[in-house]
Every structure is written in C-alpha cells, then in structure tokens.
Image 1 (tube, rainbow, N blue to C red):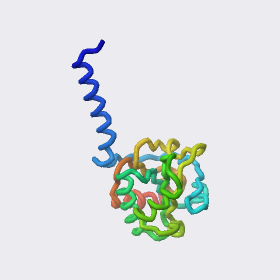
Image 2: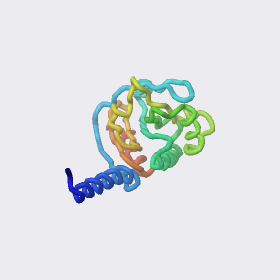
Image 3: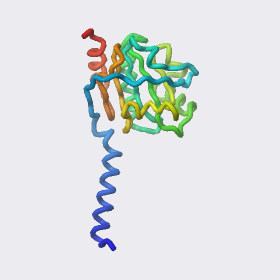
Length: 183
C-alpha cells in the first residue's frame, strides 16, 4: 500500500502535467523549420466544396489545425485575419481544419462568423473552413497533436514551417514571404 506522502507526490505531479498542457499554448509558440513533402488530403468544406491539397499545388497553403472551443485557436484565427489582409486574395490559401470530431459544420460556421469575421463563404478570398473526418485524419498526418498548430506548405508541395501555439502574424508573414521567394 503506497504511503500518504507517495500519493501526494503523484497527485502533485499529475496536476503539474495537466497544467503544462493547458498553459502551453498561451506561453508562446514553438516554431519548426522543416522541408519535407506535405501529405495529400481532401476535405469537404462547410460551404460544400472540396478542398484538395493537390488542387493548390502551385500556391502557398497555410493549414490551421484548430477547434472552435479553443481560446488560443481563436487568437491565432485573429492573427490569420491579419495575414489574410496582408496578401492578395488567393495568393496564400488558408484552410482551417477543425480537428474535434464532436463538432458540427454549424458550429464551425458560427466560429467563422464570430471569430474570423466572415458572414458567408471566405473561399473566394482563399480561406477555407472544413471539419477533419474519420478516414481522412488530416491532423495526425501532419503531427497536429496540440492546438493550435499551423503548417506552411510551399508552392512545391513541401512543408516549410510549423508552429504550435499562438503565433503572431509578422512571424507567419515572414515564413510566407520566404516560401514565395524562388529558390
């Protein structure tokens, strides 16, 4: 039978572990420079079209793994609004993928309206909203095991940069500018 002190130490360690995962996205983003092929995927958007990475192979694509209930995701979405406004419509494609399988298209649509500021489809400006689906599992393909996670894919279909946590618009824009520049 474990001692009272042992149980207390285990309980404190458990609380600290959970606190670390809860606080991590608020503390600051982790940034990773990468260069590897992006995994292909296709998802039906909440507007009924299909976003297929293969259809955007000559564009810079920013994949945003998020959930509507996630406060750091809401903050990152606001930063993505700034990025969207800094680029010509369609120059950079953004696809926000809700990875919470319990959420619905209606919830994601309400999120798009309240947080991203779009009352209707944003697809004409290059911002797509979709739910990850069982069978496609885009989040795990990209290692999105924390929210929010951003992944920047260059015009050659390679992952150039990834961020975990709240990421500021200037940092995202610098990576986009590097991805757009010819090698």
